[in-house]
Image (tube, rainbow over all chains, first blue to last red; front, side, top):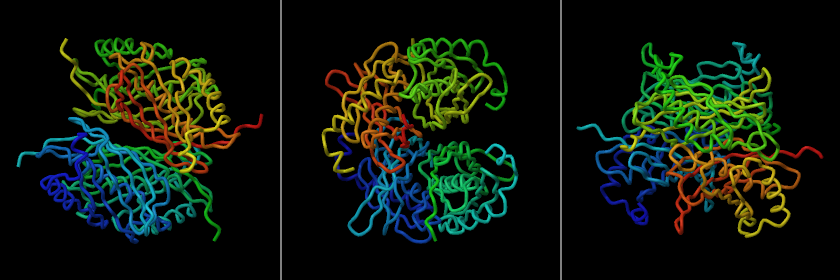
Length: 151
Length: 151
Length: 151
Length: 151
């Protein structure tokens, strides 16, 4: 894995597989999230600020923050999986470190450990405003690889 | 707390305060979630199935499951707080135990420990279909009480 | 599983397998921990108070609390496993709810969900003093089942 | 905090305060753990391999791994606290990434976010054997600052 994560490029097939899966996540489209970066073992997902993703004080809701963090980690794991496999989230834990404010937020999922069955990812979410980029949430996620059902 | 949680009713003022705060959570309305039960130290939030809340296999997205779990826990904590205070999620951890399927899902937030500064809640999410109710996610959440800014 | 956990008795073979494994955990003996209850999907481990298990204020160290909680959950999972399998902790999360004081503490591991590969347990730790039993820690744990190496 | 963590040295008073507190943790001495590095926002604790800290397969027990990780994070937070304050672990989550083997293991606690009330730390544990250093556990911890009781 070390060698693959040093590459900048996940390969066109992997990237296509991920973007196709992402496009089928109704929640991501409904929130307005989009994939902004795909590399081996790392995926970024951005979410613009708008009233539909807020909590009661007008900040990004922890549920929105978590949703893009969970997807970023899941797809980061998926970049290292062979074809005909699927990824499922087993569990994750996230600390909300600061009010989630900004023009948009960006979740970064990074594979810490890629095993045959289980993968562990680091989850980070940043708030971005003008030139500033601030860590607003940090987490850790466990994922499981399963074989795709035969078509 | 033990005595208060044995009550069935959170009191009209507490319930009004919670419903008003919930109505200001843009994300909850955007997802289609609604509060279905408020009691001292316990809040339920339901989310109907529809394409806007799914992941790539058509199940409820872990982000949607988590979002209503986080809000249910936050409001459960809030039922035990005095006026002029606010609740913020410090962190939570959630295990996705089974595919999140059903006509709707329901999150149940329950206060485990209510302290002066920190509150710890149990988070459960059930998938409901016809007469069946199945545990699909289980978690634990830490919240902090902060004073509201003066008006 | 529901039926098995309603039984009071894990069966003599399962209980022997667990007590034998526990006896090989050098840390448990070194801390002074002992298994106090084995049932299908549930194991209790007790740890008496003594200076060797404290933190800087004389309470039980979170590491001691966690160690018996982790073992209790692991063996709770193991009660439901077939022969020639092993259990490994994937991860756990624990909230320290109150100062860990008492004549002894007792960890209770309970299986929430038993799958083919992964098992999820609830972890509870109580402080016991005279007739009082107080919840001092609460957690959640993910475990994986692996086949034993051939002898 | 950024400036302080760039320093190499926590200051003699802070280091003395931490070593004195550590010396009062009965569990750390009983396990054979020692502090190996103190810097602002970062503390290392090492634990040599011996039968008293093992699980049933002879690896380091997750409870021992967690115990030094918890202490490393707690003292990392404490390096940034003013005098006459104490630190308590609110909760932590840890993934056991690989069998905990080696001549010794070393926990590294690093402050991610230092707030007035709450501090969040990253926890890493490495297995060391000869010249190799392998990440065997990774976690995240929340701590609270409390005022010391008047003497």
